[in-house]
Every structure is written in structure tokens, then in C-alpha cells.
Amino acid sequence: MEASIIIPCYNCEKTIKTILTAISKQTLKPKEIIVIDDGSTDRTKEIIFEVLKKEKLNIRYFWQKNSGPAKARNEGAKRATAEIITFADSDCIPEINWLFEMIKPFEKKDVSGIQGAYKSRQKELIARFGQIEIEERYEKMKHSKNIDWIGSYSAAFRRKEFLSLGGYDESFPIASGEDPEFSFRLAKRGGKLIFNPNAIVYHTHPSKLVKYLKTKFFRAYYRPKMYSKHKEKILTDSYTPQLLKIQIPLSGIIIAALITAPIVGFTTLIATTIIFGITTLPFVYFASKKDFTVAIASPILVLFRSLVFGAGLISGILTRGKK
Image (cartoon, rainbow, N blue to C red; front, side, top):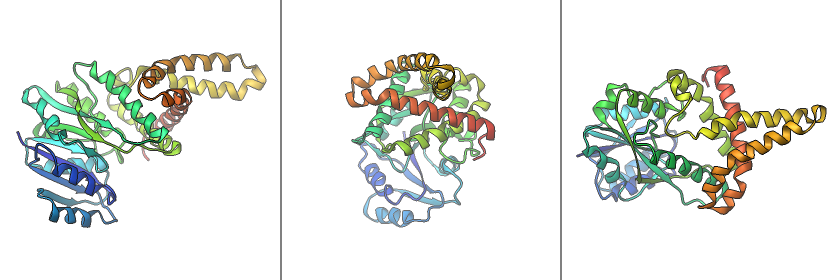
């Protein structure tokens, strides 16, 4: 079974050589690597052709006017020639058996899509928190017979099926929810989606709190746009922790109670803070088995995350995701 690897990139001169080199060492060689350059203005193209001269890779390079990763991935899928298309982000480093693990489940004819997994080698507290945050969601996916959420950083689909559904929704201008939105459509049509934790790519998470919160804000900002197309997913999906949906309004109540406390007293503030703290305990326990420092910092980081999520959701509702 042959596979095409599709990599969208934008100004990725610092990372594109690393991922292409990692792909050249895969135990299973791809039929082709399709790089869709989303209007880069740096040395991305030159570096790709430098790699092409050194590595025995079938790299097909295409340039498009800056239009976002959804369109770039769709263009890659249209140009692919293999039965299976796999997606990877330009800042990821796949393990040596990544491609093998990505396409192995397709031996079963009823499988439509595969979700791989993130790992990280970072040492910064915020990056470690972000990785454990994702790993908690992986635990949820491991216990789902079928999932409905595939992130495009490590994803694989049958090409014909992907294109028959129109690919990713190109109205999402940045990486902001176009991948779960497609997953929802595919799952609704009866496609079987599987999580394979052995298909690993290493990733660099935001290491500074401000950048981490900015990323979370824009994830939340486009959620109303995504949920407007799949209202039933507001209640539950195979990826989003249910406690997160409780923590978001609780965090808002905490801020409101903090502001009004000098006037109405501190009872509401204390009670809500205690309840919020209780909702963080499952994550604190999960994190404690992996990184005790992250576990200690988790309640305050989860509070910041919840506040920013709430702000992003409200902003997205008010502007209808037009940013």
C-alpha cells in the first residue's frame, strides 16, 4: 500500500530540512512527498531544493498564494498519486516508523482515517504542561472504539474518500478547527476513524505563557464557527474533556466574583474557587504520574486556559469567526 506525505508550510526555513531528513529515514518509504508552500517569503524553497539534491526523495514542490493550511492540504491531496494521503506539519519530526504506523490500520477496508500522536522533548514548564494536556486527551481517545477528531499534524486518509467530501473547509483562514470539522463530516458519513498512539511525531509546543494563551484563544475563537456546522458536537466529542466545558464558565464567575467581592463579600469567590479547584484534580492526578512540577502548577494554568478559552469563544460568537 503506497502513501503520499503532504506537508503544508509557510516561512518554515528553520524546520523544513529537519522533517524532510526525518522522512528520508523512514522504515517505509513514501511514494512521494508533496510540499505545498503557502506563499513563503523566506528561504523555504531554496532549502527544499538543497535537501532534494542530497536525499533520495521524490519531493514535489508547489507554491500557492498565501491562503491558509486548509487550502494547502487540499491542494496536496489533489496532486497526490498514492491511495493513502498522510499529513504532517512542517515543524514536526516523525519517528522512524511513523509512516508504517500511519498506514498499517488501512489494511482493514472499513478504516477511513488515522490519528497519530504528539511527543515533545522540551524542558520548559509551559511546553511540558501543553504536552501532558494533549496526552490527557489521548487517554480519552484510547478508550473510544471509534474517534471523531483527527488533528492534521499527524493524519492519514484514503485519498478518494477525502476528496469526495471536499477536503478541509478552506473558509478557516488559519490552523483553527478545519481538521476536526472534516473529521466530524467523515465520521457522520460512517467512516471509521482510529487513534494510533504508535504513529508519533515530535513537536515544539509554545514555551512561553503568553504564546500558549494566544494559541488557546484562537483555537476557541473558531470553535463557534466549527460548532455552527456540527451543533451536536457542542455536547461531546472524542477529544475534548468534559470538565473543560465546566471550567470555562466557572473561571468567568471567579473573575466576576473577584471584581464584586469588595461590595457583595467573598463568599461566592471562595466557593467558586474551591469548586474550580476540585474540577482540576483529575488533571492534577494525571499530570502527577508524569511530571510533578507540572501537576503543582496545573490549577493556575488551567484557570488561565479556561479564562482565555472563554474570551475566545465570546469573541468568536460576536464576530462569527471572521478574523
